[in-house]
Image (cartoon, rainbow, N blue to C red):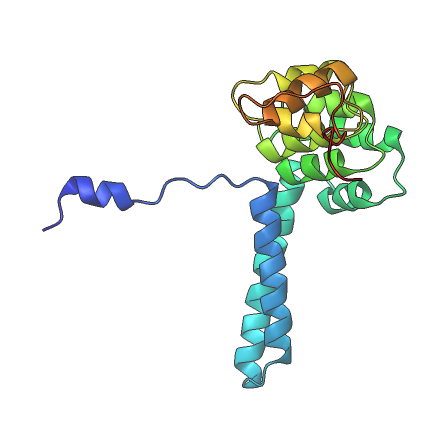
Length: 196
């Protein structure tokens, strides 16, 4: 017998509809549309399904544009390797707090400027913070702060970042060694008496 508690347990919780979800839904609907366009269906049914799918796709486009006007243009600029660091910074300043996908794209860009990375270092989405921790343009002060974050283990990504200060890198890499293992000044040398 089901009790009210059991039903409540399986009730769907509200889904966060950020840009990643909306973009994913739209991409899926576009695939379905292409599939229906190629399918052998009675003409009236095919026409009705295509019309319905186009409405659903347009609704997702409007939803993205409510997050940020001309969302597709901004997203494509963020993904373009030729976009300048100044333009990336402009995109970041107008970033909606729910636009996790564009934030990810901006922090993955090879030319992301230090100011952008510093701004997004405390983003609510963990994948964005991870991108900042591994990006070579992230300022050293930000890397130090991320390495000390107790809430998540970003220190490993910071330790692998080529811009990580040497003292911090040594300190973080020491965490990777098994307990009790020590490094010696002759690390990498063969023990005396071994064959050469």
